[in-house]
Image (tube, rainbow, N blue to C red; front, side, top):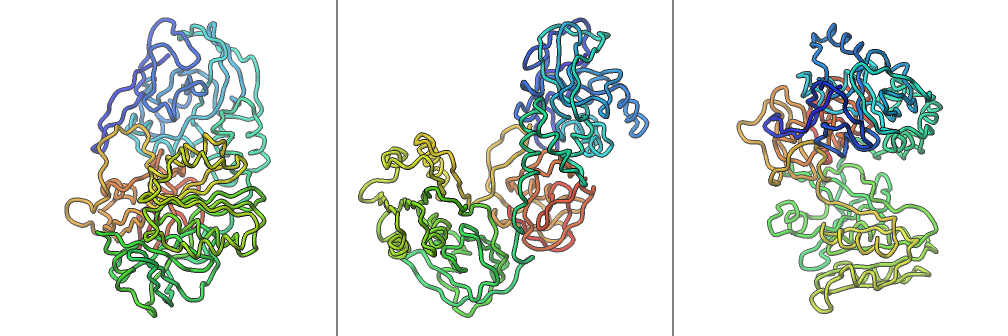
Amino acid sequence: MNVGRPKDVAWQGRTVYTGVWKHPVDGPVRARRLNLDGDGQGDTAGHGGEQRAVLVYQLDSYRYWQQHLGLRDDFGQFGENFTVDGLPDDEVCIGDRYRIGDAEFEVTQPRVTCYRVGLRLGVPEMAALLVAHHRPGFYMRVIREGHVRAGDEIVRTRQGPITVAETDALLYLPGRDLDRVRLAAAVPALSPGWQGSFRDMLAPAPAAATAWDGFRPLRVTRVIPENATVTSIHFADPPEAARPGQYLTLRLPDGAVRSYSISNDAYRITVKRESHGTASRYLTTELQPGTILDVAAPRGDFVLEDGPGPVLLISAGIGLTPVLAMLHHLASGPSPRQVWWIHAARSRAEHPLAAETSALLATLPDAREHVFYSATGGRLTAERLEALRLPATATAYVCGPDAFMKDMRTALTRSGVDRIRTELFTARPSVNPGLADRPARPPHPPTGEPGPGPQVTFARSGVSASVPAAASILDLADACDVPTRWSCRTGVCHTCETPLLSGSVAYSPDPLEPPAAGSVLICCSRPTTDVVLDM
């Protein structure tokens, strides 16, 4: 029996708040619905809770790792609550129930692949080793609360259909049998998160990620000022049609890499000149027709979905560009769908492409247009959006500043609209489980001398830097304060999977399953050439 309260632990210059440090306890411990008495988790999003109330690891696996890694038998060091004699992962099944003491438990899922077990053991790759060697351990929920003590007999009272080891392999390892995935997804006792992951695997595969690899030269045919600060740029002969709502990534003559939404049904981008933006200044004031620019293939999953239901196209400022591309697509039919165009701008003079928008809406049989100018009639607020009485069956596409999108999401939800898609121009929010908060810093080049490795460009963050010796791309991103998303840091969970716009990488360690084509796992990859990443 092992318990432990969360504590702060120093790690790579940061502080991790974690409950992975468990220690044996004497006497009976009460198992409750959410936890054992005296136990706790630092990151309750990934650990603990009703589905993960108790973590189990086996004495036989201790002996296995002692032989392979020289680990000692310090019970609780794998973060487990119950160290058990027996119950191997290749025999215990999801849905098994066990009576221990006067409590009863149900097996819900394998262990979460998390970097903190490696932190605890001093073996950074431990999360990957647990999966690769089919020894993850498992979580249980408490069916009947009661007291448990070391030495209690373990009695199975119900058996499930698929083992812990197979379930773990189906999620994390290649070569999976989809019939077995269907079986796993249908097990009622499996935790909702794992059920959702398996359902995602069974969903139809998306279309190919990109029309071409890396950058290719495209010729600028027209540069058209739309107002005092906004300019549209047209490219010749699009080699592949974009999906409405996607964006193009450009590499400019000075090496800067920037992404801009396509604003029509061809390859047109519409750029607002920012006061301190060297890239936007070049594109809006210096770029000339005939210029050749390196352009990556259209990307992005903020795209118009097919279907018969109403469509809400909601934008503010230059955020109109991706939803205008959606409007072009709807008008090309024209679509019989009910279309709502809702836009916010400071004034008529600062509302680019207004006439084009109205002309497109006029071709649709069931269109509505609502424009709000904050300088004259007041800004578009959540209350004003609710007052429009939007159809609850609609799908909403929202693009604009973060605060605007948050307000619109709130209003849409209160209006009964639950299919809401939003577009972020900046890097996606971080997923850094367990790290203590610290003041946010804008992305920046790393301190110190440049590294000896190839150059990595984080396109959304606008930062380029050379990789230090032996560092992963994730290590470099962390040093640049580029927002990152990760969990295992060893190539297992694919949380860090990121679109690769150009270049090539090598892996160390090798991931247990390769990422999708056109993507990389930044936690364990190192560039072999200069690379550009969509982050």
